[in-house]
Image (cartoon, rainbow, N blue to C red; front, side, top):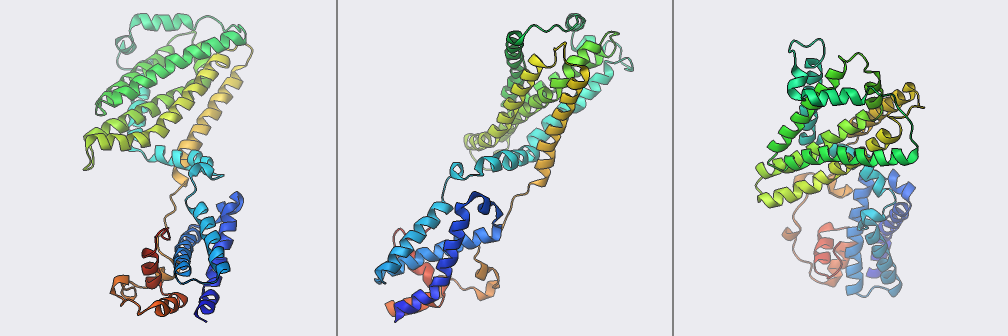
Length: 381
């Protein structure tokens, strides 16, 4: 009689858990589940574990025990499956976690401000409108400026795909060397990264500003337009990743410095990965599109504009719009009760025997289920 009452009382929750398992097993349906429904799934899973423990202990019908074993196993697979096994796991990481992490990282914001503001200021000071004469010579050097001016005075010449691939490799090595210096110097308690980022911002800005004073500067700006957004943003990200780890050595937050560094390294890796992707993309554009004599400047400008929009959309729009869903980890029934209505399970007198425990379980006594689940091995989630 008690077994029949237990099955009749608990069956609706078992069926509800089974329906949620069906939804979670489908990638398209799983994405539609609200955070509250996911919390409800976890609560039903815990209850089913406790039901299974009591069903085993008090020898409920074999069919019921077998059904609960299958249900708990099925729910366990959905609750504890790895991120790689989830159909949309990589999409969530790429389009939600990474842009949110990068946009909210203070080190990246510092690196962006430290690069772009001095870059623009240096570009202005090296231009004809500058009140400081000879600024570009002092920052970059006359020989480097002359070499750059000479290299961009020769018209573009297409030399085939093999040459473009070789140049892409060269540009990848050259650009990543700059990014690697910014990253590695950032590990010096963040101060080295601040210096290296500022130095590169001033040098690059002065180079751009100086080229605005050259009469025949069309080829230079036609060359840098397409790949510039990816390349410069990659430098900022590499610097931000290094400074994030360097700052962790200074502000350990109560942890040992090595532990703070390791924790920060895990958060810095996605930023560094994003920088690598941009460096590769910039090298490809710089090797095949930027120096092309057959592609019109309008196409190169279009590539540069689309690159800029893609960067803003990914790092700013996605970083701002994606919010972490947070729902308190309580069951739906417990969430509607006030603090005074919920007593500790340890305050309840233990049931007199198996009959009382089954009746408490059948009546939905959460405290009894928790005590029962804690007393059985392998039943707790």
